[in-house]
Amino acid sequence: MLIIDSKDCENIDKALKKYKKKFEKSKVLLQLRERQSFTKPSVRRRSQVLKAIYKQKIASGKIEG
Image (cartoon, rainbow, N blue to C red; front, side, top):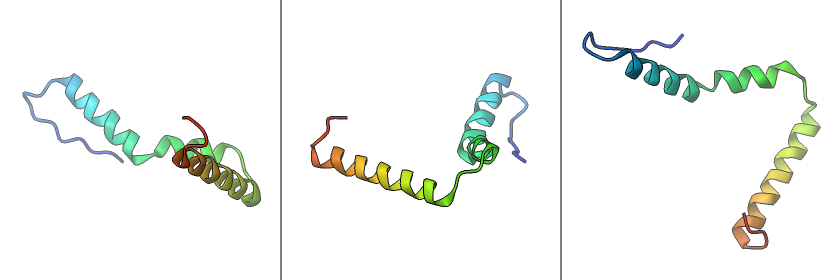
């Protein structure tokens, strides 16, 4: 549960902006999307390896990002 401390004189838009930022940092939505479908551990590991290889290629300059 997210709790936002807002002052009486604070605008509702600012409080809503704080809430949205806090919600995004908590990564609740990412967890919900991951739980919608099951991915096998081998598939998850393979995608992590491919992502790491891609990042290394960008860092070394072989691929222009």
